[in-house]
Image 1: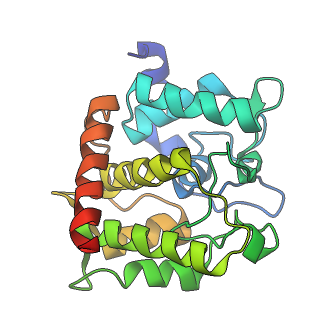
Image 2 (image 1 turned 90 degrees about the horizontal axis):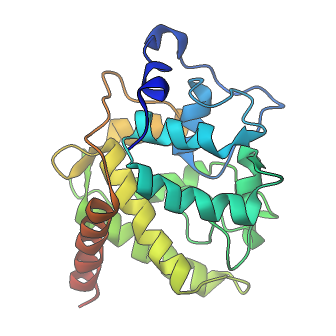
Amino acid sequence: MGNSKSARAFANESEYQYQPPGPNDSRSPCPALNALANHGYLPRDGKNIPQEVLQRAAQHKMGLSWLATKVILKQSYKTAGHDGLLSLSDLCYHAPDSIEHDGSLSRIDATLSNNQQGKFNQERFNKFLSFSKDGKYLTTEDVAAARLYFKADSHAHNPQCIWNKDIEEAMWTEASILLHILGKNGRISIEDAKLFFEKETFPSNWQKHPSFGVRERYTAAKALKNAARRIDK
């Protein structure tokens, strides 16, 4: 779904060059949303974003389907929005019903970071990269192994770890979206992952994949869960 007007809004890519955020700009725990803001597909200051603006950017630049995006944003605006608007830093909201959660691939848990869970942590991200078997790519199995590790680490070392079935599902959904956005042939280049997480920009010559809908998300998450079960055996 979507409309041609919103597609035309991003027609001139020269208008969407990367600019790092300023000291007063709002950023989230999600590198994908931050990348959209750093390129101007979202307001560059990351503040007071209407849901339809975020919906359009996620669809037309990330390749998520209308319905898949709608489901995620509905929860985001319900729990962290204010009068129909959302600043990216609002997504640092940490609670049992929040989009943000413990066990991140690149952020320290809220309790363990003095509520700085929105900030990128290089050491943690390096640990994520270490799950690559060949040092060049992250496969579905590598990402699943990293997800299991960080979940277990939070449960072991964070006495105030928040976890429930919705967070468990979100953990796999996020991983499936990451593989969709950055992956090629089911694996992510380490160099592409570094650009995306460390600089919060898109790799050179990056192109979005075909629409990633609810069915595709379910299939990708199922593949990750199956990989996790094999690892746990």
